[in-house]
Length: 81
Image (cartoon, one colour):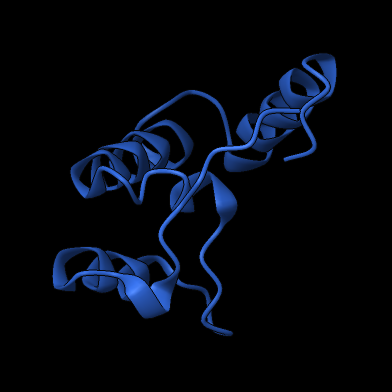
C-alpha cells in the first residue's frame, strides 16, 4: 500500500487551510483522497472540481449509478476508498 505524506491542518499555510475548511465535512474531517494534495494545494482544487463534475455534472447516468461504478472500479483495483 502506498503512503503519500500530507500537511496536517494545524501546520497548513493560509491557502491550504482555506481549502481544508472548504472541503471538510460537518465533523471537520477532510477525506484522505483530498488531503494527499496538500503538498500542492491547487491540485486539491482541481481534483475536487473534476470529482464534482464527474459525479454531479450533466450525464445520462444517475448519481447512484455513478457511485456504483466508482465502487466497482475501486473494488476491482483493491482500493479501500
